[in-house]
Structures are given as structure tokens and as C-alpha cells.
Length: 276
Length: 204
Image (cartoon, rainbow over all chains, first blue to last red; front, top):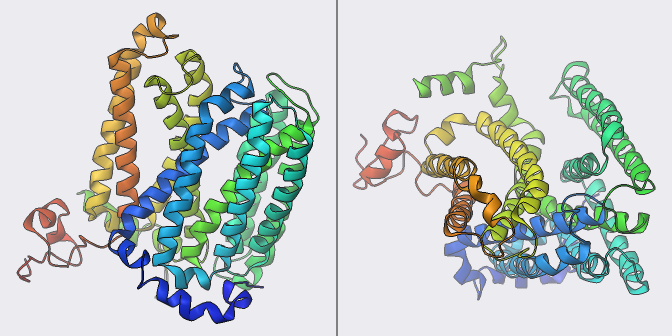
């Protein structure tokens, strides 16, 4: 499967083609690289603030301070990051519209953006502000944002050529679990994960030749499922195990995981627009 | 000398026998998805590394977490930053390994390496000198001038590193195109495969 915007709005192509030669695309094009830098810097600002605020919901990172203190200190910079990616994204997109129109990764990125905004402003921030308590409104927004996130993830995972990008999300989830699980649990986690990585390498380089794509694809897909199962399983154990510095229950932690991963999905999909 | 090593890395290391044999570097660059995964991972790693260092630097500047001691922020956030840095370095080395000669003759890469060295020296100076007196200003909302200067320099250098990193992808100053003499010198275009061409079109 490979979706793109043309399948939804087939008559929009002339308008999309005209974007690069009209305002603001025409103005942006000569300074395209600078706007790209702005986009990356905004993503970094958003990433840093989101990671810290949501790791805190998981009971990791700045645990000496309550989540509300992190919310109070990081909200301005998180706003800077979100506004930055939206503004620079629109400008870059207008100068490069035809490529986005034909791209499945762009659909994933837009779903991640919508889900990211909902999960950040409707769920993660209110929960951090209330020191881990999840209110009814946050639960409703979490259901909406989470569903959009899963839809984007499904499109990412099932679209040809861009689906290797899902490994970014699996890797990020793997790192979050590594941070969240402590002590013996971390050793067990790594004790299975590292041999799995080595096994995947051997399987895809020795047992199956690296240029034998017909056989590599099912192997890599199988490993993606195995990695996901192991990482999600470990996360599940961590969700129900009380640790130091935790301010909420399992749902608070799930919100922490999902809010980080939704922005990782947005960044990953953005990168894969250039690759496929 | 350096270039000779890079030529060997790019074209010889790991090369098997046969006409179509590739070096490991060429195999990495030519891989269907792996190079893209490494490149994407480098960017996502930056979200963790640079994103968390931003927060630490803002604390040192007295902009955020003014009620939280600097030691609390650095002790809890810097391990994440270091983890992110290691990840970014590993993926960055892999990207370099995929086309070492391209990077070697790229002015943005060279500037990036110089600014990266400045950023690392700044970290060393901070830890060896400024941090020694941290006990006396740890809880201050606004740390002393030395700490704030180090934080500002940190932000500026990482900003420059990221900017140069992005500009590497653009061929504005590519060897083999007409370039000012300074660019041809700075990129060592004369010894590159594409050679050096002056603004007047003369091949050097």
C-alpha cells in the first residue's frame, strides 16, 4: 500500500504545482536551507522539552521536581518549538509542495502533527500541570490523539518504501524503556534486546545476503514485530510497577510514552519524505 | 596522508574479489534502507542530545528552572544528554564512513568540526574551572557571568554545528564548480577527484 494526497484530492495538482511559483513558496525557495535549519532547531526545542516533561510523567529524569514544575518551566519553550515547526513547515512545504503531494510519508507526518498537538496540549501538559492526575478531558483527548497516532503508525508500517522508518519509532521506544526500567529489570531487558539485535544482523547479512531484498523484507518485518513485542512487554511491566519519583498511575505513564513517540514519528516521517 | 586513509576507507576496506565487489563504505551508501535509517536516527538523536542541552544551558543562563539548583538539573538531565551525544556521534561516524571523501572536501563539514571542537573545549573549561565554584551559586536564580557566558557559548556553538550539518547537503561550494580561491584552498579541491576551478573557469 502507498497512500498520497493525490488519492484524496486528485484535482488539486494544478494548485499544488502553482505553490512553488507563488507567495510564499517563491520567496522561500532562495533561502530554503535556512528555513530547513529553523525547522530542525524548532524540532530540537520541541523534542528536548517534550522528552523531559514526559519522561517525568514516567518517573524518569528531573524527579526532584514535581511534574507541575517542569510544566511551568518548559511550556514556553515547548510553544516555541511547536509554533516553529508549524510556521517553518508551512513555508518549506509551500516551496516543495509537489513532492509532499505525492508522498505517503507526508500523510504520516501530518497525522503525527495533529496527534502530537492534541496529545501535547490536550493530554500531556494538563496531566503534568496536575502532577500526574488524568482528568476526564485528558482521557477523551488521549483517546482521540492516540487513535490518530495509531492510524499514522499503521500507514507508516504498511506503506511501501517508507516502512523501514518505523524502526526509528521502535528504537525510540527501546530507549525510553531503557531509561524507565531500572536495576535488574534493565539488565534483563538489555540481556534479551542486545542478542536480538546481533541475531538480526547475522540473519540479514550472513544467512540472507544483504542485497537479497525479496528475502530480507520478511525477515526485517519479523524482527520489527519481535522487537516491538519485547519493548512493549517490558514497558507494560514498568507501567504497573511503582518506582521512585512517580506521580501517576499506568495511564499517566502511557501518556508519557505516547506523547514522546508521536513527535518521533513526525520527525521520522519528515525525514523519510526525502528518501522515498 | 588523511586523504589517503579516507580513499582506502571508501574504496578498499572490506572489498571482496570480483568486478562488482563493493567496499563496506560503498555498501553502506548503496544500501536500500540502512543509510536512510542512520541519517534519520542522527536527526532524531539530535532531539534528545541538543534538546536536553538546551534546557541545561537555559538554566545556566537563568531563564528556566530558576527555583531548581543547577546541580539538580545537570545531574538529572546531563546523563540523557550524554546518551544522546554518544548516539549522535555513532550515527554521525557511520554517515561519514559512507562517503568520507565527500565530507573531507566539504567546507561545511570542516567548519562543523572546528565549531564542534570549540563546543567540546567549552565543556571542558566549564567542568574544570567554572563548575569548581558551583557550590557558592548552585541555587542562584541567575548564575554568575562565567557560567552564563559558557552557556551562551554552548548554545551558539551547537546552533552553528547543527546549521553547518544541514548545509553539508547543499552543493553551493562543491569542488569542481567555479569557486573563490579561498574556498578551493579551504576544501583542498586541488587534490579532490573533481579538482579546483577558479571563478574565471580555469582548472587548477
